[in-house]
Length: 379
Image (cartoon, rainbow, N blue to C red; front, top):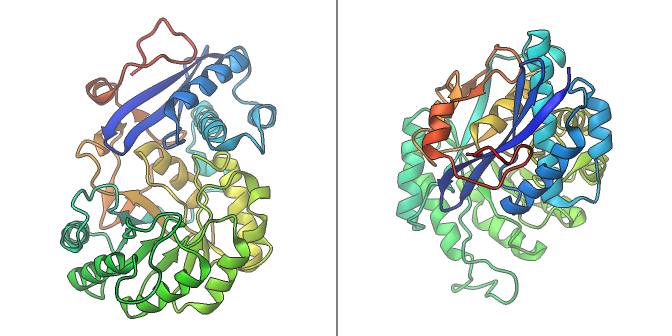
């Protein structure tokens, strides 16, 4: 079997960005798919995919390890590694279809048929007031989600801002969290994403302010490149911590695997190197009993890819779900994405378990200069 083409598919979502998918076709009639969303630069990501198309055409897609090694660049940067991760996902999809088994069988088989999700409401909320966040959180809870996340600290920017006192810049963010907690009650778990907007001292003050909100976790108060600060925060706050959503490769996760820097790590199948890398990171995390809660505020394909291997881990915690972005999300996949009572129902179809629905792609696709056969219109 040989690869005949690699084609990107760009689907328009909302003001916060598009979903970028990769489709790899073979001369055996098998087509694999992966997701390359949120690389930080879609145009550059498409250019990288065009380079990959030239390199991969004619190669055997079943030689995943060789292809993975030939494309791998530890210093490639987020855009390059997101493109690579999508290609790797698509290759596993091809292998699963070729063997007529779901990908999770290739990794030892599923330990669970449902994957617990938390609803990230942040990409949905336009009205960034306490009331706006609270309304969205209530809607997510009413749909059955038992855990919700928001990123409330819009005002915190690098550089000078007021860090203490009644006019501290972070106080509106705290009020947003309090409003959500009041609205959903104590029966729904609540996580806060700080988007690395704080320094260590400020993070400790804010965590203390949020102590009575009974947080599920306090996510990335400082950047993942500051593991010593993250470890100190973890040791001194009253709630669990989480981090490491943008790191590539198991080597990059070393500070989070050799010791307990945070309570839960968040590798993203779209950025970390793909499905196998994600699984290797999760296995290494077991050494220090670190939980794995994959980062995934993206489209349904990355959700499906993550679920196929997360269902095999003993230290899986919970999976992120980008709640409320578009009402046609589930229909983008065939069979449709199934979410019941806040859980993703695992597909047992071959490969990643889903194909892209061409009708929905046609309805929401964007014409782009593509990779591979540029004579085609790439949605």
